[in-house]
Length: 100
Image (cartoon, rainbow, N blue to C red; front, side):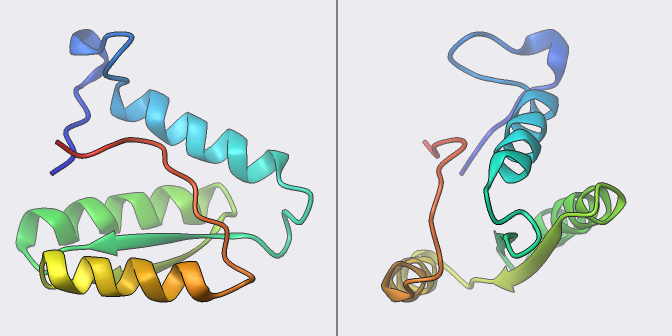
């Protein structure tokens, strides 16, 4: 599970959700193929995760960032999806925050 604290509780080792979003946006805009690049959001099929994914999707839409939401139903499904993405040559994976 990834925890991104609100700005008032952020630290150098734990960026806030605003900082994480801005980092994703900056990385996307620095991409040499900006018009062709997109974000893949892997989301668990539970209410909280789906609501958060919808919020991120709306933010990406407002910032003209192409994105795709992919549901994953557990660790095994997450690992399978990750492995499938890694094998695709047109996909470059970037890590913005690590789970604990």
